[in-house]
Image 1 (cartoon, rainbow, N blue to C red):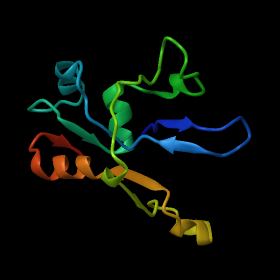
Image 2: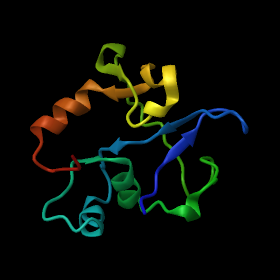
Image 3: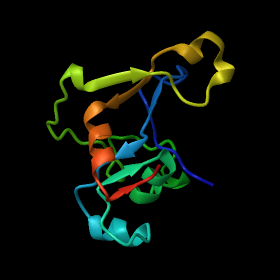
Length: 124
């Protein structure tokens, strides 16, 4: 079973969330390499299940506040220019009718460039 990291972005009862699909680890890279049993240090982790395995996120983290001391999101002052963000259709939601065609999947064009040119990526 794979775990997924969804960040709820609205109040309880309103189904709005962001699925974290990839990360670029900067800290504890040696630990991540060992945890994922990789032959080289990872630069880019692709895939929601791999993200959770990398960060050791399991069901014990379900429903935790992101304001807690166990799990949180930090502002690292990273700013993307809007021209570097691309919108596309979400994957695997053909059942959603007209909503399946909404451009609600956002990715950084920079991460795609990095992925294609970096040999130490985990995923795809």
